Length: 274
Image 1 (cartoon, rainbow, N blue to C red):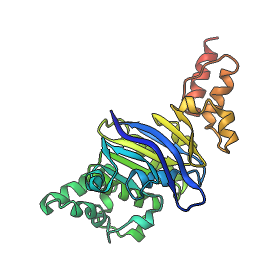
Image 2 (image 1 turned 45 degrees about the vertical axis):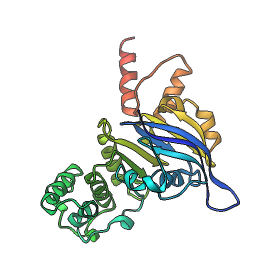
Image 3 (image 1 turned 60 degrees about the vertical axis):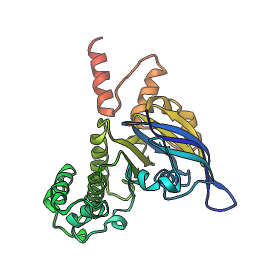
Image 4 (image 1 turned 90 degrees about the vertical axis):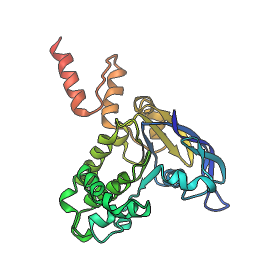
């Protein structure tokens, strides 16, 4: 069953050039999909269209079978949440507790239920010890965790991460990527990550590559990264682990690991058997 269906989608910010041109794809319910591409490829435009912040020029979007149109927007927005790239621009409350509570208040959750929900989702993102902290005392990664808790607390069916790691330091970036992966496996939650981080895509179920507003590659990560020449042609690299796998494949050796560590262990095992 598809959580999202995108059909022949186009969007233009002006009359000069379409930011998206004839984009079509499906996202299966409960899956983890990464959408990658350079700045200007149309990734963030696509994210905003999926959550109903922009209206397409042509084509249509269906969320759980509901067409993205004005009469369905309230129902659709109860199904989908988004985490943006700049944690400073999305921290709404004066404390962590207030920030997580914001969405719950808008959804008219009874006050007597709210504290339990806030504490549950703060603990899920390991921010339970910071509930009374003010935003200026938090790191960028901690603010992003609070943003994620606020979205999860509203129990959406779909979460879109729009370049959510791009403004974080390396430690915060890795921490957030691990957290996103930890949500994967919940069959009731569909994850879409809009990213320029090639390594993140290794862990997704499906990978979509955008270039100049069009889909140029789509499939499982191993299928997409097998197209190393095309990736380089549009100015993207492939993850180091897939570079190694493709190199060994060209020499008749099949390697299955998805990380440098797993590949090294696998090659060591192969060598020790000889």
